[in-house]
Amino acid sequence: MCGIVGYVGGREAAGVILDGLSRLEYRGYDSAGLVVSDLDPSRRAARSAHALQVVKRAGKLAALRAAMAETTFVGGLGLGHTRWATHGRPNDVNAHPHLSEDGRLAVIHNGIIENYVELRERLAAAGHTFLSETDTEVLVHLVEESYAAQAAAGAEPDLARAVREALGHVDGAYALVVAHADHEVLVAARHTSPLVIGLGQGENYLASDVPALLPYTREVIYLLDGDVAELRRDRVRVTGLDGAQRARPVDTVEWDAEAAEKGGYEHYMLKEIYEQPTVLQNTLGGRLARSGTDVELDLGLDPRSVERVVITAAGTAAYAGEVGAALLTRLARLPAHVEVASEFRYGEPVVDERTLCVVVSQSGETIDTLEALREAKRRGARTLAVLNVKGSSISREADDVLYIHAGPEIGVASTKAYTGMLAAFALLAVWFGRARGTLADDEAAALVHGLRELPNQVASALKRRDEVAAVAEAIKGARSALYLGRGVNLPTALEGALKLKEISYVHAEAYPTGEMKHGPIALIDAAMPVVVVATASTLLDKTLSNVQEVRARDGLVVAVADEDDARVAAVAQHVLRVPRTLEALSPIVAVVPLQLLAYEVANRLGRDVDQPRNLAKSVTVE
Ligand code: AGP
Image 1 (cartoon, protein in one colour):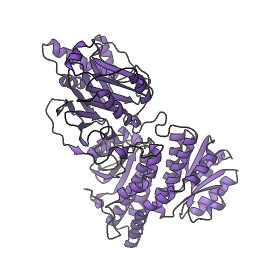
Image 2 (cartoon, helix red, strand yellow; image 1 turned 60 degrees about the vertical axis):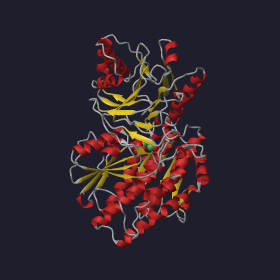
Image 3 (cartoon, rainbow, N blue to C red; image 1 turned 90 degrees about the vertical axis):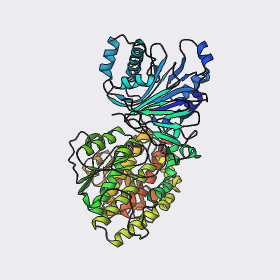
Image 4 (cartoon, helix red, strand yellow; image 1 turned 180 degrees about the horizontal axis):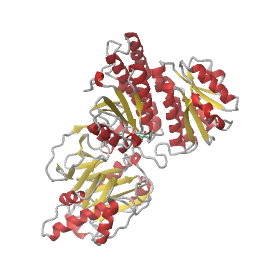
């Protein structure tokens, strides 16, 4: 996934673009670049052949800023890009923008051009010179080819038409922006990868995501697949690839710019961990009926029409789905299971009109999950998205959406979105259970009461950061860790292990606690921490026996346990305490110390917590 920013108006474009890119760096940070066009006629006339001023650098945005400090770009039109490499190493040449040979046309792109090899061969055979290893560069030469053909035919070249014609040759996912030295317009197009227009007074903006727009405008237009937009200072026009005008609604963004900032925390990730009580209030808000025994969800779905549930997602969202499957099975007696999206979409899934396919995603742009959604719809399934980002691709294609209202999640490692997803699944399980008659009043009342208590309980768990930090100090030198959990907390172990891996680069794997003795126990020694979720459960006795098996082999045990539990402390060297709640809701509190543990270990190892190596916030390429 990459970050895209565009601007046309009376400000100096370079400053607007650098500011916007800094708010999108979470989308990828292998390299960055920008191009500025001077709209002032007198200055343009005096400028050299390269009327487009361009700079691009490998590395994070800081490298681009340093390069910009050595030069002065003047002009009110520009575009900028921060990259997560798909084709071509992260270096200056492969960084976007990519320019035409005469230096007058520039393109930036997020996505993958699936047929770029054949296009590149045809264009090279026609005399085009390629400088980079990227798929994106074919777009420059396709637009250049169409633009030149218009000029050769004696027409006044139309840049938007050249882009539309170029895209007629393209297969794949794209969000792209094109600028030409001779035109006071940005031309943008999207297919699968997101693009949002920001509307100003005498100026207009473009970005991959809302945070880049918030300092300037809240009025936005979410482009849809097949849209081609022309942005000028004073107007925006959206057409299809056929050139026919398309009407697009103007939305008002509810977030404020501050919400997308760090709020005084050292890292976005830490801020978002501590936002979880608020997120849970937002997820639950207005959905717990005053009766105290019911849940109110604004879904077009008839719960009694569903015979089975297939949940599909990626990464952390898939682990949230695992908790959701356990809750739907136990509370609503609905057969439910998870298939990771990258498998589901190619696995000939058995789904039909009696199946509810639940797609889970923070960004709403993960390509595997989006394509899994499309595959489920092709096979007749009803679809529901458990989702954070409004206006995202998945939000527009699912039949129903259950928003988690977590606000912008900037840290690459997902935290608040995960607990928001869990709360959403708990609501969904109660909603189905009540509709299917599998949850009696007293059970439902206990669950609704438990849900109401969660924000305060998570806030209480967050007060124990010092205890977690002490454990992090004890295990930070480990080369590997084993995470164990049972039932609804097996996903908690999976998520805890992923958190540690993705931000500290310490290997970790998760197992069902009962499976440890079938092989992984061979790994146990004093050097490998074993993190066990041991909160209240009907199976706690068995978990304690497993902990004893680890201790008998000199294993180091870190247990997550209820605040008032004395038994776990008797067998584990370290205990991370959480408030006691219903077993069904315990994953929401039990994950909190594991999020903090991963954060504290990564910080002690000097890792880049918000932008871990090789990762991106949402993977919009396959
Ligand atoms: C989460 O910490 C990871 N960064 C990653 O697994 C993420 O959950 C996954 O890529 C899915 O993203 P999504 O929720 O935006 O679809």
